[in-house]
Image 1 (cartoon, rainbow, N blue to C red):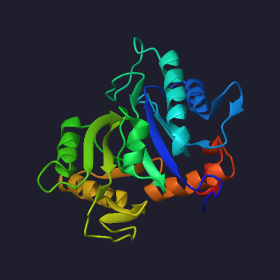
Image 2: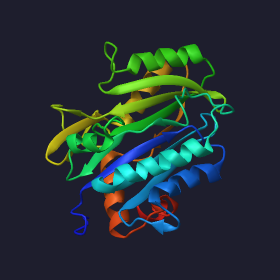
Image 3: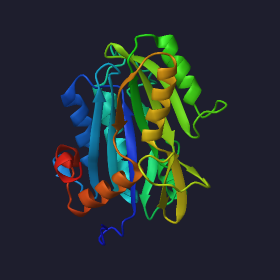
Length: 265
């Protein structure tokens, strides 16, 4: 799918905010990205909202033409600053402020460098996913041990994976950021492969498969006499994000998060 009107020059922001327990606040922030005074911008769509009550943190996926994304993200940030009082905010996930993370990623016919120009001090990179795996234990020290074992910065860790362990809904969750990287020799793309591959604007990227991460955590947990309960992928894979963005913006669907399960999932 593509949008001839935009030439498919699309980018996305996975806006991390320090609020999840007040749904109306989160949705007000998402809607601020779409426009103001009831005027929705046709080249902007909120693809997904993921909220975690224990973390008291939401990730809002905003997609737009690269020329409009900066303004949309700024509008959402301003709404967040006005709506979230960090003096009373509580949650188990570490946070820097009302707006915690503002990464911008290229999707279609735009490179990381151009996204970086849009982001300026915000930050741009190849796509980063969030994948969380819950282990059947309340032992935080054990969870931290498993997180350390899969962390890409450690010997025998998984390339591009950052991991932390948190108490979550009475168990321990291994929360992973999965970074994309260039020049990976493996280009396997089956669901059980270690690496998944994709391209953006002619550049080739790979990332560790969420299924593989789950399998590795399951093995590490099993070695310690415990099981895993489940895996949650926060938002989309890079290809899913690209497909949803192209569809939503071509159809001028600003509040795509409200209908996406009926379209793609």
